[in-house]
Image (cartoon, rainbow, N blue to C red):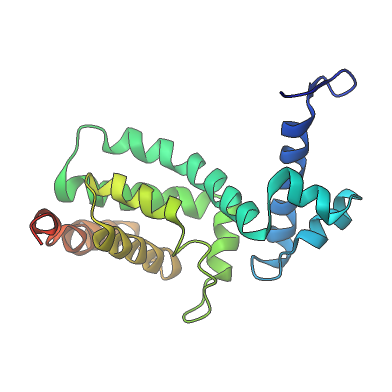
Length: 189
């Protein structure tokens, strides 16, 4: 049962988790995902690592929650933009909106700065949460197509075109259609 603290005016467990995630986000922003440690969070919060583990889990759980918070801020906008769309138009719109949101998001700049070929710790590319969102953008269950959509989007995020209209055309003519290739056939395999 959540314990309501009369001094904090809130549930102590959720307040502790909020503080841990806020501190973790600051540390990740300063030092990157790969150098993030539970011990650093504990030191910043003046508590023991055991407290961080008990309230928020280990490094992987905390990083997954940070990715979730990042994704939730973006996914709502994407959902609104793709409502009623399907096929290539749905995917292309999802990519364009996702890129705009990720580029505007402070944590997005950090995530992108931390991703390098053959050095990705998997925080984004192997996240089950990100894969689920990618399948939602596709409009159907297809893990391989979702993986491709993630990689297309990350490539465009990492190497943006300077001309927004050229990037939009690239997404609508090539990226969106390539993500949909074979999607209908996946269920029959």
